[in-house]
Length: 353
Image (cartoon, rainbow, N blue to C red; front, side, top):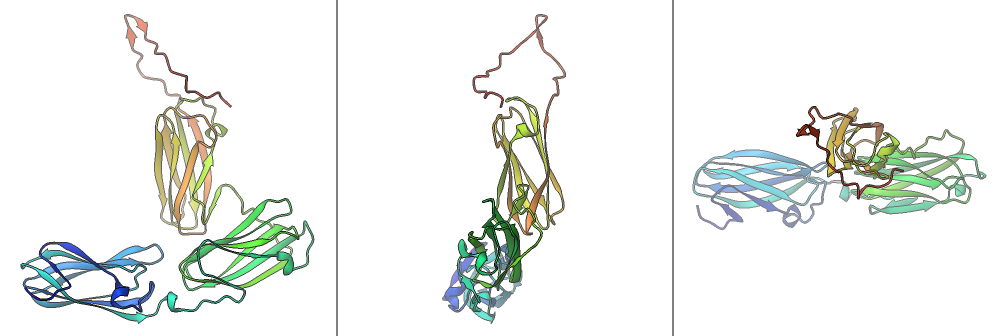
């Protein structure tokens, strides 16, 4: 084949293009029709794909074509400004890309104006401060309920928090795949403490439309150290709190976690080497993970339980156990009728706490 092609393939390969360079009106989240015109002197196969959805899932469509001019069409809502075209098999001598067109079928969230009645957050990591006492008359020690209404056209999360009358920070998280959410926090209040709304993640602007503060409510301990809220990744535990062992012993650590949606992570601890094992739950149902750690270290916060990703509102540590491996060797070697004793290097040991 011959001609003025955007790209030409003589063997299997990938070609990446940027939709916004072809159609400058394109923004992430728009639904588009991508049309690629190709020419070949033989049959060929391939695919075209990109990332979609809040979790950036790779999605592709496969194609087969005959000799001559062929057209591949893909209707999709990319969340990245990149599309890949792959050629898998070429029955002739070459395949050429004649033209690429990007037509917008439906405007996405970035074309919608988000404007809060009280405040509009435009970036992740942002914080909005307010005084609960500006919304309700109360005294130190009164129980109050703070209710915040938020809205956006795409994924966002964060928390509402304030120090209680004892100076302990209390918070309640919110998460949404788009739309309105109400975040409620009940605390024993201090009248002179400032509250805040933290915006941890957003794909577009988030509107704060209402804040109400009323007296009364039931306090829920949202600072439970067994619960991972949005934005948390790792919790630490001390093995000696669960098991009587000495440095250098072999221990088995077992943790069970659950949540209200998909999650994954890993359990780890140091011994003769770092030992780690991954865990995953498809729907939040309980999952148990165990590791056996030879030569376990004896120190504070030596167990790490990491939750790398979760799609619900929380993940919870349901149980944690640490057991000492007291298995004796099956055979004891003897040398000339005498049991051989090996000296153990204890120079690096730490005193038991």
